[in-house]
Length: 131
Image 1 (cartoon, one colour):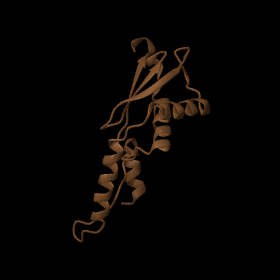
Image 2 (cartoon, helix red, strand yellow):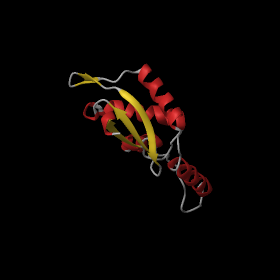
Image 3 (tube, helix red, strand yellow):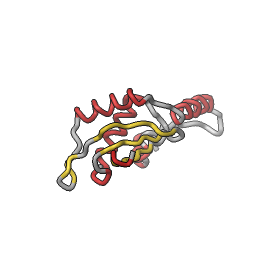
Image 4 (tube, helix red, strand yellow):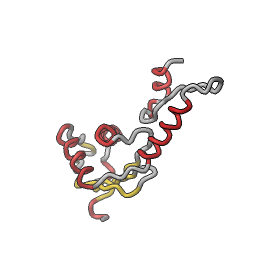
């Protein structure tokens, strides 16, 4: 089976790196250990609020959020609240109107700018009044 078939089969885990190793010969086991260390660093990554909000603002300017239930989503700001896995809270006008596809778009933008390879990312959407 080739790499593209694996990636297609795990499409919702597209952030996870794939490496082929050999149990018989030990081929690429050292690379696997390096990859595990790298992913552990990504899993523990902390992003400063200013840098995070800059990327989010750019992403929103490039692609406006869709209108859901007659309302436009407004993202006021975001902050990282924990690591392992990286967890971000987005303060928005209405958490109920965050569309799955737009959340994936924001996730992809964060991965593109900060890496976060090999780790899931958690997003929590809260109404600005809750802070």
